[in-house]
Amino acid sequence: MTKPLAPVSIVYNESLILFILVAINFTNIMDFVIIAPLNPFFKEAFHINTQEFGMLVASYTLSAGISGFLGFFWVDKLDRRKALLLLYFGFMLGNTLCAIAPNFILLLSARIVAGCFGGVIGALVLSVVGDIIPPERRGKATGIVMTAFSAASVIGIPSGLMLAERYDWNAPFILLSVLSLLVFILIYFKFPSVKTHLAQDNPDQPLVILLKLLKTKNIQRALLFSIFVMLSGFTVVPYISDYMVNNVMLPKEDLRYIYLFGGIATVVSGPIVGKLADKYGKQKIFAMVGGISIIPIFLITHIGVVNKLLLFTISTTFFIFFGGRFVPAIAITTAAVEAKNRGKFMSINSSVQQLSNALATSIASVFIYNTSTGQLMGFGTVGIIACVFTITSILLSFRVKQIS
Image (cartoon, rainbow, N blue to C red; front, side, top):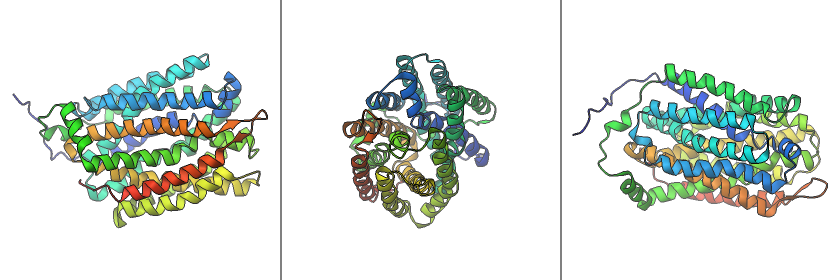
């Protein structure tokens, strides 16, 4: 007997939901992106090398990738609110374990726990956007939600780095644990029940749906597109702070300005890119922003010792176009599947993205290493590889059909 389904004509408070989604995304993204800027602090505290730091990054993304795949089998069976509460509680636990980890092995284990829940949260947030926002406004809404990346750069990373400089590497995770608790309370009391996806009948079992999705040409193209978008960015991003400190000779206390200036710029540019994607087409805007991003990718991976004005100009331009690519890219993949399977697809897509991040880190670690003096070698080669991946992602974007 089929249980009664929630009516599909519910009017949601979009502004409130988007605000909460931004808060969720902010803490989730900050947890992920704070690792790369803390690279020099981890190396000093735990006496680890570049490859071991790569393990620290990959441990999160591998865990997130596996949990994202498992999430496929249940994420669309629950009210979005219940799913968010469950996953966010586990995310808080992972952050707390990171904050109290006494050594590298336990920190590595804590990152696995955080990734287990954080990876699925990202997919769920985007599924909610797909559920409640009409296609004609989805690009703008995605841009708003993705301003969390900018906020994490403007507020989260600089404040985290300042805390690490003044206290220790784990201070940013203590801050993140407190913020996560506040967001959890906000979800519990203010986030509404979202069941529109349950109103669409889908009698097939999850495994059958998975096989059907993976056999669909458009889904295959969307997933391949996601892979190359991730590879084009995360071969480079985890190692920027190491390169800035050891090759460009930027003092550790000035690292915060790279992320601060880049974040401020993307707060403005992110929503603009979203509006342009709605007006002129997601693929066209992705191609334009992605094409321009090749220039700062090449520059930031080849730059030597220069004055700070030029350095911050290059790094800010990098973040504008690197971050800008994700707004139309997410809108492209979100619309590649019908609503009844969107949560499942976004869970698989999140899994693929996280595994791609782990692969990107592994690819980069083959080419880069620190010399006895600390200099990072091979980063320029990684930058060229990232440019090739970017061009490939642009070509693939035009092959993804927009369904909803």
